[in-house]
Image (cartoon, rainbow, N blue to C red; front, side):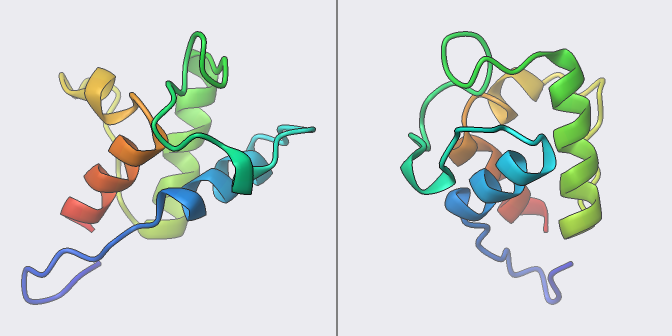
Amino acid sequence: MSSGGTALAVSARELAALIVEGLNLEGVNPAEMDLEAPLFGDGLGLDSLDILEIALLIQQRYGVKLKADDPNNLAIFASLKSLADHIGAIW
């Protein structure tokens, strides 16, 4: 966690690598992922179970707890960039 109230940057590319490895996404190269593409639906095609796994991976890596009942989850999980921005803002 950050100290002194200073937000630390979280790389969307680093998150891409974490998600590809953590979800065992075979054939997906994190270096080539579109960081602003949707994570769900037409983007990576992830589902609601994947979101739970991603939240757990993020909690383990960054110590940031993402809540299932957060009303902003659609915006937070919209893309790798939005997820990285959210984590960086509270990390």
